[in-house]
Length: 302
Image (cartoon, rainbow, N blue to C red; front, side):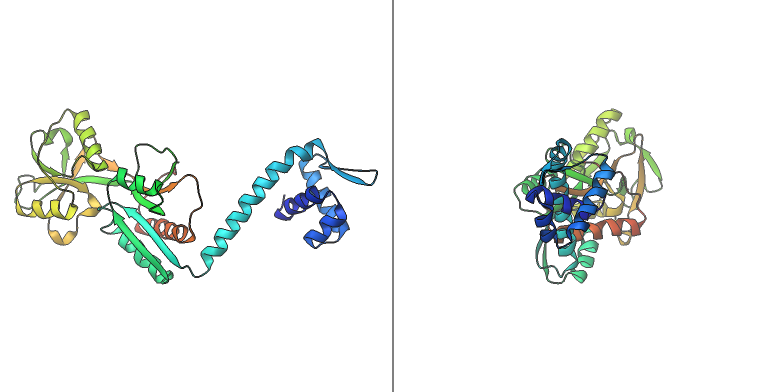
């Protein structure tokens, strides 16, 4: 079945006249009749009754009509989005994200985006998961680059890759020679972690509970840069994404086991509504950056 078959079918269904429909779609009547016959042959059912000089929809045609209308509308919408995306984009792109992803992933992708679309004003704002999702629902963002939310009501989550959480200490810490550490070994150990309003902290607390471990959370900081600066200056450990630790800080990274803790960054969209061409273009850049980085993409979910 080809796109023109649907267009020709809808033209005849609307006009109930092969002559008028042929004029509408700018083909000869014989061509139109032939194309409709091809569609009927492929479907295995007659769509029109052509008797006594009149054209009417058959029962099969009546059933097929609303599906054809919906399918053609979706196709036309997709074609329009592609056409818009290939033109020079203007306007604004509003991205919500986390402090971790805004350290490297988001800036890299925004840099590529602005090179391709210099006329688009880009706004990037950080926040917590619940706050960003509420803002997305309120229309304040076009797309979120965030971690998998706990609930997907009215949302579509497109996972990108799996991100390992690691323990980080300075070279003077007692663990500075360790390559791996089990979650249970963190019991009563001093840690600096983000506040409970962050989804990362919720996930870490769940891992501690599963292992029967109660670390001593002496400090809570909303800033990853602040946590790493604290670790540099004191005998305290923290847990962050491996990608969040810049090599120039000279900090020691320890893999976390039993269980390993990982997060899944991804794109978050509203399930309903049209995605802006700028957001669609940015999402394509993000997917390409993930592939180039060698990260293993995860299955999509929504």
